[in-house]
Image 1 (cartoon, rainbow, N blue to C red):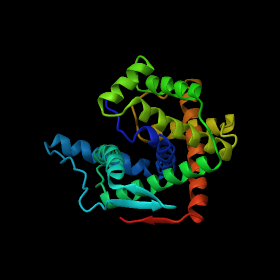
Image 2: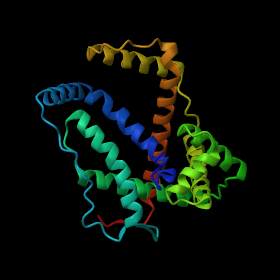
Image 3: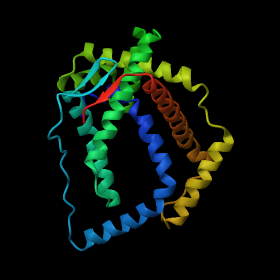
Length: 254
């Protein structure tokens, strides 16, 4: 199992990614289909798309400052490499060229947002008990398909992360989760919202002439509920970050 060192504290970014994906899904469905067909044609003709490499030339030692706290080059590079891998795979799937300058800005903005959330969570004195940390460890181990929390910690230790460091990062993430939960309120999607999302998904599948059988609403409901919940959390998180940034002293050096 390979886990990016910054991954634990970047869990909140999943909400941002889900939100962005949901926003662009409708507009990009047709383009992605056409791009996918173009990619298939390219592969059939024997052409191979060159895998891009992350461009980290000229990254400053201090990428950003947030209310006096520095986001350093090492932290940025670690996060960027993880995000780059995902973006590069998506780029190959769609056939669209990867804009690394834009991706760098997105990663820097995400790290600034993350730092703002951490500062606000500390300011409001949210806490994380040992029980909460251990429960989160078990949850993360399950997500990564690892047998136990101990095995998960062992795998992270092999990559240079001590148990103390892991638990410290999980504590910070739990505090951020509590902040988001308090600000977001009820993010449970309604039955109507889930049915509308299902109908949209079914329509898109039909438009793409997909041979894949569309699952029934009841079969798809758990996944749809999870996606809509993440989307609502993402929207709430972005709103919190936007509000915090208005009053913050932020400098980005990219």
